Image (tube, rainbow, N blue to C red):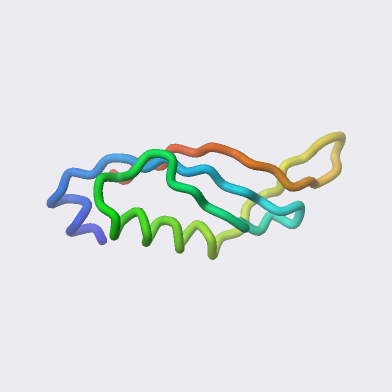
Length: 73
């Protein structure tokens, strides 16, 4: 992964995350490709296996959608 990032000078990827009220990432959509489909796929899979703090409204956890830009270097 690191070798590919360095060889191809890939710098960032944009994603849209759907997060459940429990903080589980339930969907990842690539909004800006890194330029390498293998890296995009790896990042998508890693994000799907992660957990985040859920969105909060009036101190109550809730599902939500958020955009994120990930710097790869």
